[in-house]
Length: 295
Length: 251
Ligand SMILES: Nc1ncnc2c1ncn2[C@@H]1O[C@H](COP(=O)(O)OP(=O)(O)O)[C@@H](O)[C@H]1O
Ligand SMILES: [Mg+2]
Image (cartoon, rainbow over the protein chains, first blue to last red):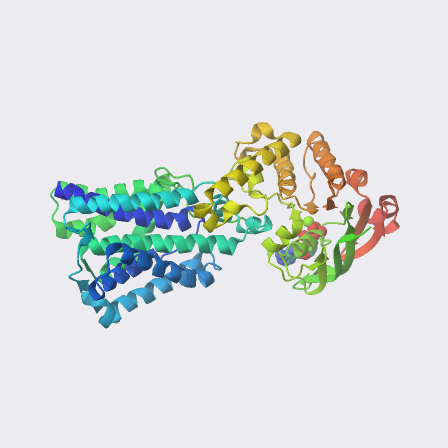
């Protein structure tokens, strides 16, 4: 039971990350590798506030989302003018810088050792310490994030991102403010990723930089691509599949030291299999990277 | 007649190739201007400059008194200039109806704040434009295709759709780049009828077209250009009887 609840919490957190990534990769067709950076910003801001000021969960969640959203605005403004490879490089730079800050700003982030002793979430005066209790919190948060994504995933709003991902020049000729649309999505996406980070902080009650590397960004992209880019529920399917996949290894009794490596191989295989046989992902409608702008 | 759009001495070259050379002209309200010229004359380049896709080397252009050069593409579109592309451009992976809906201006639902804080406004506006879009598709004879992917239309239907998109934008100036090139006569007739009706709706158009007879039927005035320059301009019959035009079209 504990184990099942734990797995579901992890799925919930990755589903939120996938939903956040889908807003930019799925809807607008933009590849950013900075998602783990924003995830980390949320995690660190919440941990810092909880440890230093003992402020409550909801406040820390809000502040983290606002900080990450603001950072998304600052990073997205110039980066989103770039397309394709250049956007990847720009977001990669941000990712590297953020990780550098996590690792080196020791007085605030605890450096490579991270931050620990984070107090549990209190709801109505009682602490949530069991995976089952936390699962309720994660499920409720994921539901809100899904609701927000659903507002953006339907017309009229979604029409412009869809037009942009297919032909950004035509979108502009149609009078759409391409830069503003992309930036709006990027800001919301950054804030959403931070929400996942806050949940991670309060669940693990310990964070260190290793959870927020570019590999994590790539894992989040994999969730979106395997689940189905551009489909509202795609990232949820992707999170379920990719979190459960390595659990099969555990059930098969493979020792955890080997499992860690095999897991990476499995993720790689899942991504390659998708690209070869199902570019639109399991339930997606948009083959990421295959429908680039005609010149 | 008041002038809707004006161009003054527009010039553009691409590494030595002259695309526009000291090109000036004006289009009046409710006027259809036919633009003739051999391939490579600079006709499409002129549209690209007017819509902000290309910056000219020099020259100026204005629309309803607003300077166009240097203005971002989407802002020019929102002033009331819509265009089609010679190599047919649509959003192919969304439906015909969605393509038309995309073109309506000032949709509150495109704004993040409205999406979350004024959902009622977004919904009402969406319902309104949906009705208008269906009406436009009905008039154009594409109503039965409304829910098909744009990609699944025939070439002629796609060209028709791209003009319906300009109508949905409710632009005052339509820039139509070879609207009937390569399509069946029956579809061409439908498209020409829509263009011919534009002045009745208070709209103007510049129409690039190689089919001289078709262009003669809809244009109030014609310009013949070559190597980026305006060679002659005037009433359709005068332009078509100009020896330089005859020479170009006999080659
Ligand atoms: N983006 C571009 N880059 C380089 N050369 C171009 C570009 N656009 C047009 N040209 C050149 O400019 C000239 C005019 O082209 P264009 O305006 O397309 O002519 P038209 O539409 O009258 O056939 C041609 O020689 C063409 O090759
Ligand atoms: Mg041309």
